[in-house]
Length: 132
Image 1 (spheres, rainbow, N blue to C red):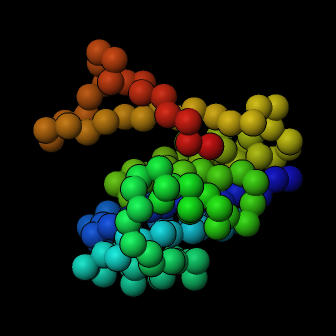
Image 2: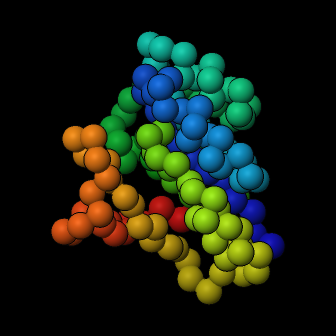
């Protein structure tokens, strides 16, 4: 059964990181790469994982790729600090990884929150993102 690493990049996400990491507490490994936050983001992350690295911000793609390079497992779920993995999605991922998955990557439908409301129409949802 393949194992899963969840990666999260952060900067000043103390308001969000606790819930994000709690939503993936079932993962085999959690890696957080913090871009020198001025708040207690890294300290909060360390309550969920010992794999917290602090480094300067080189840019979005470079930081995401760096976090992926730190992963111990081949399967990586890339999560943003303001995102949550629902119990249904967690179950779907665990079921998928219970055997050798037939595809090399999976897109996850993203539901956006904008101006205080969830956007479920137009082309905003489902906004499929390659995350697994």
